[in-house]
Amino acid sequence: AQTVTQSQPEMSVQEAETVTLSCTYDTSESDYYLFWYKQPPSRQMILVIRQEAYKQQNATENRFSVNFQKAAKSFSLKISDSQLGDAAMYFCAYRRGGADGLTFGKGTHLIIQP
Amino acid sequence: DTGVSQDPRHKITKRGQNVTFRCDPISEHNRLYWYRQTLGQGPEFLTYFQNEAQLEKSRLLSDRFSAERPKGSFSTLEIQRTEQGDSAMYLCASSSSDYHQETQYFGPGTRLLVL
Image (cartoon, rainbow over all chains, first blue to last red):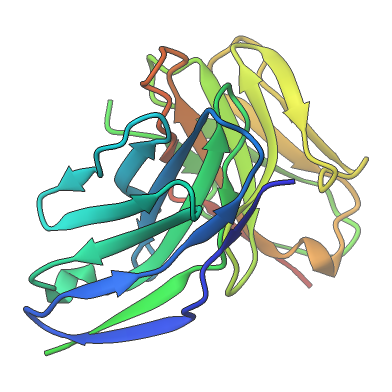
């Protein structure tokens, strides 16, 4: 079974600084997708960034980028120029190719210090 | 179309009662997923549909849970004889089946409290 591990229950960063959230996963599949989702307090889950396993280039979306290390099964999220609106729970998620549901980690609570 | 919607947003019920939740996916999406999220945890997959066909069910989906998507559009999730352990946020997500367009978009969830 696939597992996703987020080893940082909580992270804190100063506004405008850079923070990296860690995620590791375990799978025997070769075709899969990885995601980072953001869940603000009492608000719905929104997609931050996604990475296809077959792509070697790391995905980037504005201030958000990933470091995808396929051999190490690591998928970290870097947030540059942190903003107060980035405060939320961040979930790393995995899905194998096809149409399975997502497997989520337990999340990292990101606090932005003004 | 502004995204995935869920109704109701909150539900309080007594143990032993039946409850039903509704999810309306993004209109052009043919895949629909249900997840359960308990406090402090990530969402856990329950089941998914492609059009009206229910293609996968997690072992978390006990016999008291049933999901339908009769016309391949909206879906309902029913919990019979609710238990206190059913208290959770129930999330719905939808996606397209087009290759490389399979990102799941989530609704706001239905928060269930069983007393």
